[in-house]
Amino acid sequence: MATTLNDRSVLAEWLPRCHQILDLEAIEETILQTLLFAGFPKTIEALKQVRKHLPQAGPAKHIEDHAAAGTKTSRVIYGKHHGRLIEVLDELHPDLTRWMIEDGYGRILSRPGLDLQDRELAVMASLMASGMVNQYRAHIRGALLAGVDREDIIWFTNTFQCIIAADLRPDFENVTRRVLATHGKTTGE
Image (cartoon, rainbow, N blue to C red):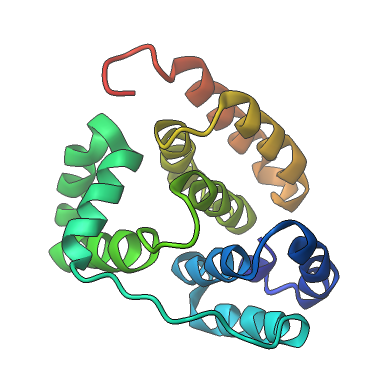
């Protein structure tokens, strides 16, 4: 969330606290994956803050087959909606589909070092901070499909209400309520 908002003061305050709870790998992975939502400049600035508190970077990681890993991860997150997602993205542009699967889900969200449940919670925080309601809808479902408990999602979304622009809070609350009310009531969700 702080990476998405480029809030260095929050990073400076919370990194020492996070390091008491999370290991370096989890902290780095959470920040590295915000590249998808915040871009390179904000991710670089966040990692500069990490290095101030935790000077030694973790090892580089690589996934051999980005397309296969990305397809597997995106199928978990989108469940029965995966096929439709691919159709919609292909209509927008086929390269976007390939980049999302290979880069977003393959290179980034399929990396070792952070489980898919924690990755989806971090994705939700980035989407809340950036005001991306439609993508949030998909990823709150994805968090549930990845195994995040409803109670954890409720706690998480209530805790992070403060990062949502005031005019968008009702939209995010409605999406959360609808997804939680309908999840599991139809096959594949």
